[in-house]
Length: 98
Image 1 (spheres, one colour):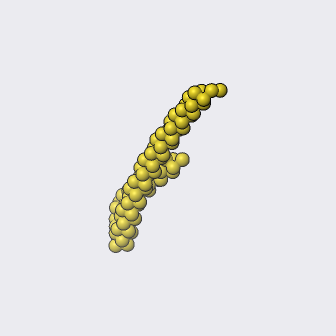
Image 2 (tube, rainbow, N blue to C red):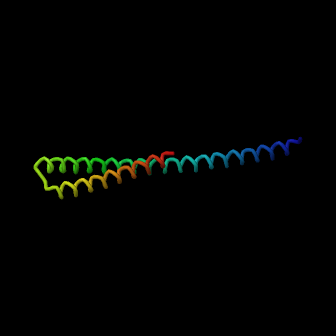
Image 3 (cartoon, rainbow, N blue to C red):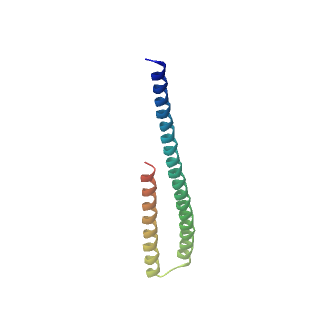
């Protein structure tokens, strides 16, 4: 091989390495965006859980005070629905972590 051929070969290799670095930077940026999205989602879910816990405490207090049977059934249905929503959120979060 001549010196010119070595230079061409080195230039091609440098170009390939630059492309690999750029690809790596893009992948890293995508992962950072995904991580940020998951962090945001986690905070949202944590806030939702905190709100639901407060609501549960209120309902527990209301139950202790004494509610009609229909009110108890309504509260039970609402709590069941909220728990199902939490389960869905946790499932989505778990799936997005894969």
